[in-house]
Amino acid sequence: MNILDKIVAHKKIEVEAAKARFSYTQLEESEFFARQPYSLNQFLLDPARSGIIAEFKRKSPSKGIINDQVSVEDVTTGYNAAGASAISVLTDRNFFMGRKLDLTKARKVNDIPLLRKDFMIDEYQIVEAKAIGADIILLIAAILTPAQIKQFAGMAKSLGLSVLLEVHNLEELQRSIDPNLSAIGVNNRNLADFTVSVETSFQLAQHIPDEFTKISESAISNTQVIKELKQAGYNGFLIGENFMKQENPGQAMADFVKGL
Ligand SMILES: O=P(O)(O)OC[C@@H](O)[C@@H](O)c1c[nH]c2ccccc12
Image: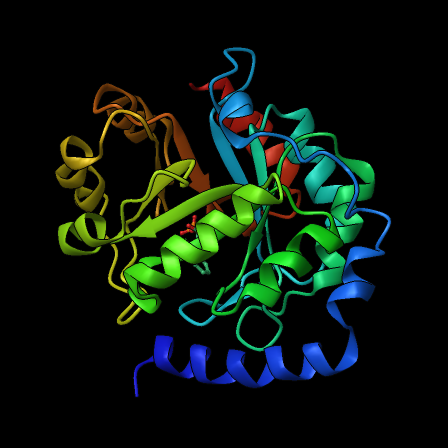
């Protein structure tokens, strides 16, 4: 079984446990459920912001512990101050050392879009995403059927959430396109075997229809590659490890943005 299969198998158990703990009605009673989410594309296309979606990630299956010494409030407010267009918060506990509470803590101190970074396999998680304070959900093509993508994207949109579809090859892109998606992200990391190549973004750029904003995800570690990705048509750049591995990720991002 590859890592992605393991994550999905564990996620199914987690989602059943969450459903037993909080009903849909209870989720809808959350203080965040009634708020109007921020739009990913509005912030991504705002020239006053950097286009960077900065990620709070303590640990990953490919790198092990990256940084477990920093607070989610310090890091995310640092990212926001450094000009992030959005902030991604890992909420998977088992493989990424994240928590749903991390996203809620970030929500309380930030006024920009927050992406719930997790493995969405059930509608319940979409309602939950809104209840914990998220603005954006991630749909990973590699683990979903086209019918699920359509259903989940439609549901998220009806809740006012933005939807980022993640692909890592042309076949996934072509089978997953749906009008309810807000943005398409090309993951430079293959989640099944962890190999990384920014070439993936350059190759797929021309195949992404113009009605979607384009985001390049993972393994971005210098400003030169961002300039090249912009030339290729990308509007957004998802960066985790490059900032998180520093003692002060917010400051690391502020220094990085000066080079853009
Ligand atoms: O730390 P990096 O290489 O900058 O990558 C960030 C982000 O793209 C990566 O964490 C990611 C992309 N897609 C995912 C799906 C699930 C978990 C994590 C991810």
